[in-house]
Length: 382
Image 1 (spheres, rainbow, N blue to C red):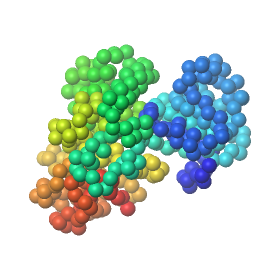
Image 2: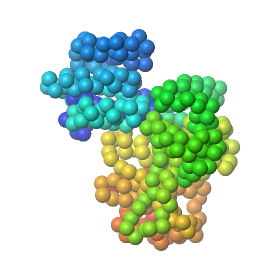
Image 3: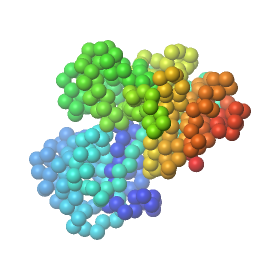
Image 4: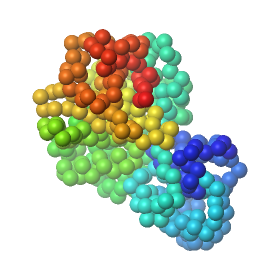
């Protein structure tokens, strides 16, 4: 096993969180072989754990990995006892989970100060091996490839459709709904697809609830739970002392632009790029790229958006290490007159902004030195 990152060396337990099928189990098995592997997706194993968790844990000696720990949170107190009673090397006990809201409740009670918590998203653009000199059409098609490792490099539309259809049916429409105890099956399925159609938009809870035929309180609860299951992210508006007129509703983004496009019914990259959702899906992929860049390096960052009621806006403000980096997303070649408002609303303590486009190599924006034009994979936060 490689030497662990400095952030992980203090913790005997590592918890890797992320959506299903993003490669959590494969990553841990590849990085740390020769250890016992317990898969709680297996019904027989899960039944043994539920019948007598204390006996199950007595049979386990570190190092070991427990996959999908949210199915057996009753194991967490016994893991705490094991950690407290022994001097274990970093990462001796590795856990994965796909439902943040259920895992974190048990972790905060049982393993506080003993566990390193990491998030894993799907494949990044670097892992998709996107060609730097690809045309805008090719680049957009590559950006819309899902982040699921099993589909990497597979351009067969029938295979992709079958995989995503199975993923939606087994994970989103069955597993998540059952774990969340959602009784309204049809309404929930409709709700997920409506969210995909709204990626990149400010949330209107009343409209979303009406279209899904549920109460606004239910829509708000389901959105929060889907975020806890790593399917989407709610980006909150940026607040500062001298900006009183900012909108208060969050913006909704799927964490996988390819999955969002498929759920919304867009199958062809070319028609998707030219269609009404092209810009929103590109913006979705840019957000996903930023989140992956930080979380896959075990770094902390928060993302907001900046918008006033009179229409001035910046798509993303990324805050990390005490600095704020503005990011504006323009799928086509940005015209300078459209970028001019960015000069007026940038705050003095913000770092150099980045205008992300599909159509241009890295270059300064001629308005001033405050902004630079870059490709999606060239975003830099230093």
